[in-house]
Image 1 (cartoon, helix red, strand yellow):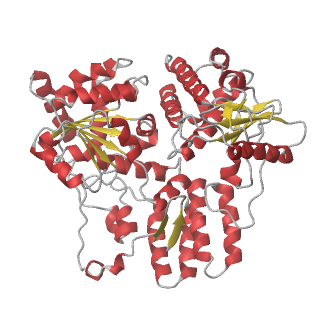
Image 2 (cartoon, helix red, strand yellow):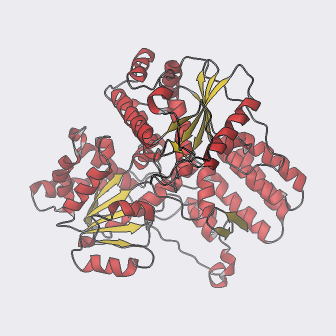
Image 3 (tube, one colour):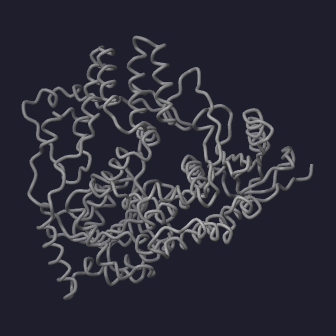
Length: 585
């Protein structure tokens, strides 16, 4: 069992489901697993103890199977300048005539829709609310974190909006999401949840429902090259058809999508019938796609869990060890090594600590050994800022539009939200890289008293950054504690780096005015609400200039745009940060 702590709750969870606790299931001679939208078939092994050989070779219908009509469109792929308020107004207008359902990942996000929603449903109200949808026209309904287990056939849902990337539900899910961020395993899990969500509005071969995938992070994930091979055949066909039918609308406002969506929502004219016939034909001819999505380590982890349940911790350790040796992705291998250490701790605690030390070298998000890990100093890129930014762009992205969508996802995470502080700090690290700086998260990676973020701007100059993005933006002054935290981070920097290195301490906080008890240093700066808004605008303008061309910009072009929008290392601090203001004592 794992015991997991957060600032708000405690969770006790097993690595896998102990399915043997249900004797009637565990001892059944024959077991049939049926699913329509399971992108990651490994769940059948990890959760239900299914035979890996059977899962790898399932029975399935030919082609894309019998599925209804879904027009799947990502508005921000059509035009990155379509924002939250645009989609809300658009959805509210359609809801006057048809039932619109919005899937949101959290209660916090549901609040955004409060002024236009007719009902907001959670686990306590879902049954009654869905019954209303199936009985009559309701308008706009918001579902909080319900991507499966809900059927919305026919007029119950004619437009389904998946608002934002599905989020982890439990602490174990959250920890795994952090440890596996950026890997194919994590992407596969997100695609699985997304597939399940998109299936809510179409429940038969004759049903129809338009689907909007909204949110910068969601749009970016769906457009990753690896994502294509993770969707089911039917969904992939429908996504491609959505791209084709909206190709002529590139850069247009969201209202231009209404006639296109009506092909699917209404289907009451010649164009609607043509769309229906074209969609059926494409689905019938769809390639079957991969037989099964099962990560190679899933079966090993299930077997190790069963060994551990039976008190065979050494065999559990050796099983995961073999899986780690075969894993090519160092991030995933590091996480597997953490699980190795969990099992090894039962018989050899000292060796378990050594394993954790090696795991941290591969994946800085896994558990740290008791003795800690050595800090690796951050250095500036050997190239100039614009050249480093150009290299980062070309090495990480295949084509400019992929970079544009990614930058918008970074900007979307730079918001004041107490539930997204981890994303904010991660976005600050990514921001440093896209601007051509050295970028690091010392506190996250080393737990050594360092700052949330550290940027190396070049010529031995640094920014020591403490992020307080979870502070309520309600006029609260900067507290003495927050001020001292930044001063402590600056002291950490002075001890870790020699005197040739100069650092400016920057506090990310909604306010620039400090409490009377606080004592900000003379060189301290604040990235406040005003500055963060200006920074987000500058990033959008910069990436818009990149997206205007079919090629990546040159180093010279990047330098011009950095200077134009105040993103150069010489301008950044003066452009987006302010000096602290002291409250009189």
